[in-house]
Length: 399
Ligand SMILES: [Ca+2]
Ligand SMILES: [Ca+2]
Ligand SMILES: [Ca+2]
Ligand SMILES: [Ca+2]
Image 1 (cartoon, protein in one colour):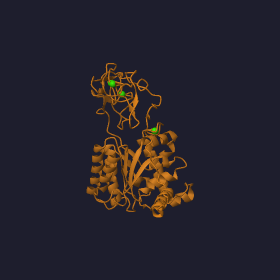
Image 2 (cartoon, helix red, strand yellow):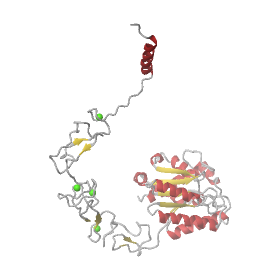
Image 3 (cartoon, protein in one colour):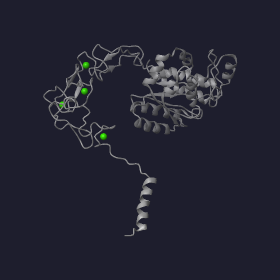
């Protein structure tokens, strides 16, 4: 019988297409009898585990493997950590870690009490002279804290009946201010401080060009402290003008989306120079509102950059309003204006501008660091901002 060449051509073409356009075959690795990434087991391969090795109470039960290559423990009974209170257990809080009241062996930990529910709810025993969990203190035991360590003037620190600090007997809260003295204090920042900053702080910093001086300054100090290791998220924007609160909305969005953030900083562009007492107060009030909304976050206030308007100019009047508020209410302040108003020898330049005329003179007569492009100014102005910034971060980190 004569073969149909058309039919053969079609079949041949299919082979050619299949050969040339070899599709990537994704075969489900579950069921192939080998353990693949993401599989607890596959078929009879239980990866050496059993009901007993996984901590289940029916040790003779038969551990099986599900169709999705996960352990099927239905024949193993219960275990510690499954959130079901079993006769073998004093508690079961549904997790596999210690130091939360119910141990990994389902025993109630010292200093705690747990309910006999499934799962058990555990809470610290306040009044037992043991500081555990979220307790800050116990009567007469302050866990090493003092009024000063909590940011207050000296006084009598106490513990409430709810095992939290009672700071009523402390003096007023003390402001933390990075001004021109912080530039010199930077020399006292050491590697342990640096490590604490890197480990503990997660910073959100909103700035435009002037505020960028802090970041440039950090980079200039990289030979001492690598700024690349900092957890620093930069936002493009600034504190605006005359009561503009755009920055506050951005801050809330960032904090709500990044709960690990614990330091918020916003800088000004020229927005202090053309501001009014009402506009400045709107800024201060909004910062304080955010502090109340996010009590675990440190908010850093800032003054505005020099503009040559001198001691009696609007800029200094507005900056004084910010500074006085911060000192009165124990805030954290990066005093941008004060930092660039003084040279390291202690000479004061009240009529200076953001260009920092004294910086060039200083570096002509003294040794300054390697220059980087510094927005609106001489590179030494960035370097002193970086020095003050590192000092402030080390203090916030509490080292
Ligand atoms: Ca497999
Ligand atoms: Ca259990
Ligand atoms: Ca536990
Ligand atoms: Ca206690």
